[in-house]
Length: 192
Image (cartoon, rainbow, N blue to C red; front, side, top):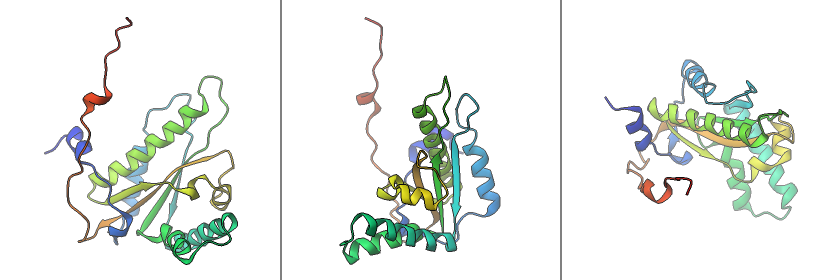
């Protein structure tokens, strides 16, 4: 049996193009969301929002992505339009993770956004642990007020990620990603 630390060290994203059906069941989704809302946060603000986007919603979100692209770049080429159109539909399931920060005297907005990011990491990690493939992406649509509005989010909300989830297809690479040595990022501060 592997430990949580070993599983986190082995975690790797699976490109959405390698994710196939079936996606997680409703019971599995419920378990994942129970874990996601257990992330550290203070002030009981609970700033995270999770939007589950399945087939019909993915089709509509594809249209929103294309409309958003054409509003920004009316002369966008067919390749870029196709890329935006296909984005939300690449995997059986898409989860939009957003932060809805609220004014709070002790919890600044950045901490609330970080908390939503932690929830996104937990979601992706749980799916990995359940044997699914998942990838967390952003891109221009994550920062678009038009996309936020279409999803029912406020302009002040932050989309911290689109998480594509599905079964790893047979073409999915099975290589272990090279990780940096942590020593390059860790130091001890002694106050001197």
